[in-house]
Image 1 (cartoon, helix red, strand yellow):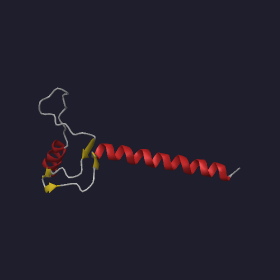
Image 2: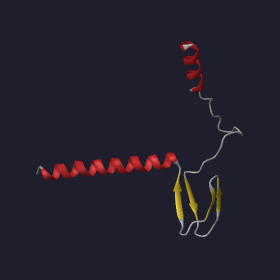
Image 3: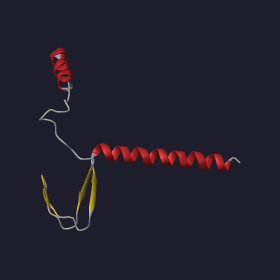
Image 4: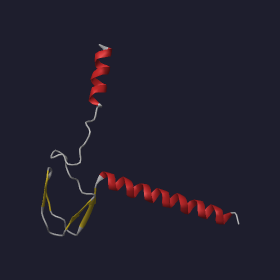
Length: 85
C-alpha cells in the first residue's frame, strides 16, 4: 500500500517538457494593462476597472518582489556602513 502510494505521488510530480513551438503551450503575458472602463471577462465574472490598472503575472510579481528585497538589503548595508564611520 505504501509503495503504491509513493509511486502514485512521484508520478504526479512528473512534468512533461514544454516545446517552444508546441500548439498546446499557453501564453501568459508578464504584464496585463487594463484601461479604465474596459470590461474584462474573468472566471469570477465581469471586471470593469474604475482607473487604469496594471496586473503582473505571478512570475513577474516574484521578480519585482525579489528586486525590492535586494534593494532594501543593499540600502540597509549602506546605512550600516555609514553609521560605523
